[in-house]
Image 1: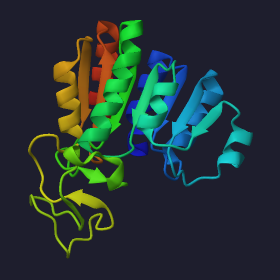
Image 2 (image 1 turned 90 degrees about the vertical axis):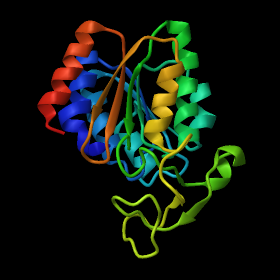
Image 3 (image 1 turned 30 degrees about the horizontal axis):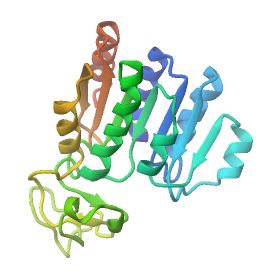
Length: 231
């Protein structure tokens, strides 16, 4: 997601004047560091949710006291965070997790009457229509597709032993179908939610989905930023 930050995410959160930000999935902290610079300049706060962040948490907190880190799965943590206006989702790239992250966000949003800003990575190939599981046992069996640690092949629905594209991850054996993939989760959620919204997409770097509250001036700003980004 950090590849979208300078040209899309930063201009949008600056225009929205985001004050309380949640980041799901930090990994090495590339995007986290960028968000923290925004927080430093704006006075915003950042909560990171990642069960296994690969950065020095204490060092980063010492430098940025407006950072908090929750080392647990997103579906465990989101219910305990009561107030945020912006959330970046780049954690477990599968239908079950993303759909239920959005449902938890919806529950909080219903009290306020509108969505926060939501950014979602991997809304294009390879995980738009195929589940990937970091921890397969964390997904209830009825929502978990048959999977294997094999690589991905552009243009192929099935996996390959010979592919060098993410062969170390647990992938659903086949692409497409019901309850399979990040974009499918987003579409299923948006079809059901009673809250008004606009949805935008950028297609490079595995895809970025952007859900924003139904706000015409903001929608014009986001449309312009996405179009001018060239991503």
